[in-house]
Length: 156
Figure 1 (tube, rainbow, N blue to C red):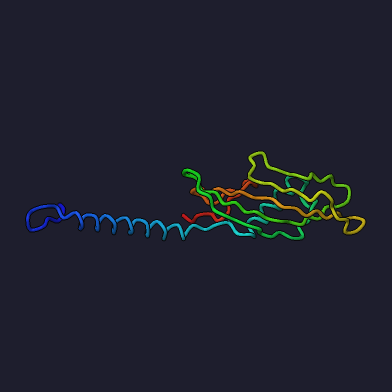
Figure 2: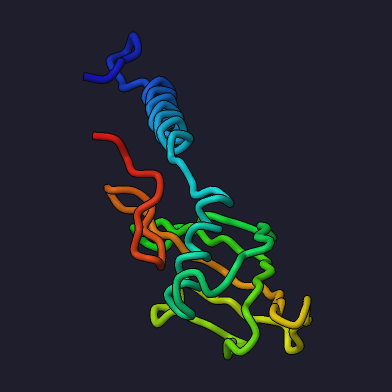
């Protein structure tokens, strides 16, 4: 099976060389396939943010004036792959809406913390700015988000 030298002994240097080449090929293939893994975009994060705010306060109640990424990273935990998007956002609410200073989903995959003091844009609009995170997790279907949707569906 293995290579033997002229005395009939197994040539371990060639066996080690082949093992190293095999490992490098496997790693190169793994790296190549991981580069095909699509990650959620800032637009996806904004879509999740809008849906989560609508779920909390009602459709059409708030207007997202700005949504920007602060940081993002992929995190492997066991066999699971997560993508965490940290963001800052500015949201306008009509006067009279009671806005929570912290809104967190039950599964901790979504958080929005507002600044303590809102700004009054005009007599009818109150502007809150804040920061938070959105956590997506990867399945065979795509990236699941806290709003219940799947982003970046993997084609069949």
